[in-house]
Length: 472
View 1 (cartoon, rainbow, N blue to C red):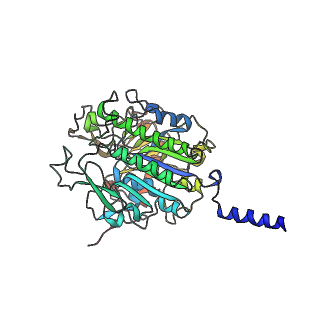
View 2 (view 1 turned 45 degrees about the vertical axis):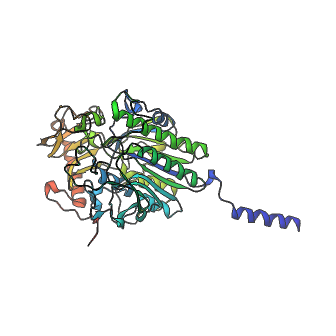
View 3 (view 1 turned 90 degrees about the vertical axis):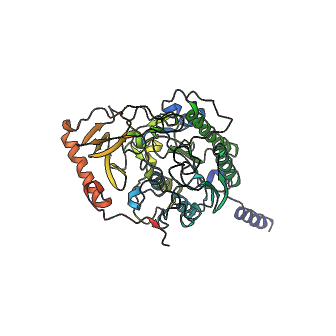
């Protein structure tokens, strides 16, 4: 009888105790910066900005050299990351302005919604920018908690360049669905976002969680706390990156403190390349061509670092092409979550991250910009551009002190082809030397136009889904 009673007690205890941390689903942390250049991290080549935490994260994880944002501008890029779709598939183009009547359609499935289905706690701290109408805010899109700003940090009347041009209201700071402050100074925002993120981890350490840290910096206007002001060799921009690096360190230290380090996948990347016409307030995409607002390499190729000690062998450099649209299906594979029912464009790259494969599951990646214009295609080591207009400084310096200079506009008149394995800076057009490669990529272009359309060739796609709209 005593043995039976003891067995009964053991069963009761096991039924009321949470699973141990080492057997639960992995936590997911995505750290997403704004307008950061490819070379704005030490391990990607920066010599005048100290980023010790990101550099150590690369040593403890993997560094992806050929990772692309989903598009070269804010809202579209974020839509691609969170849904696993090319932004134009789901009707998102460019960057939403304040008081927009549009936003990410509620019928789309975000990473947060996907993980909530398997009992994850979900939080976003930082910049949302997928619709500021209450209908489209984060708490309606799968996030349990939200703290941050609803759109870009330059969309406010205190911006020295845009204030006189746009009659914006003061920048609102949200906690969930409530405005708790209006910002006239952003110098403490990175710190606040970091403190909220650390608190989220500590409150949810017993449960699997998804933490999305979307830093508004280093988007202009630049703002940094006193603890990092004047610390870098690259002026205010470098100070801002150093504070972001500190923030990454705070998150990683908190995970380690609570025994969560091995069971958490941490992904660091950015939404698009540097806003080059802001000059000394912009990042550096060297050795890449151009920057934000172009489909050229400097516009979408981003620094990306991934750490997951339990599953990813550290210290590796991976040069297989990947895009932010692949993150959702990869997380689904890692966590056992179900993929969205509707079509997505991303594919799991988990086998590449672990080193079990060097073969991309994607035949090609497609680079759209403006309102559904197909500008380019990455196919293996090749990058092809269709004729289109793009903005550039044509070798001129950008602005100083937070004020931009005007862009020039160049025209790609004929198809250009670059071998990125030999020419990362896209300096030598080899289209005439490889007609068979050009022909193959042109066929891929025809295929994606049939699905998603192309305004440059007046093609309508048959797979596009509508953006969310408010009818008033």
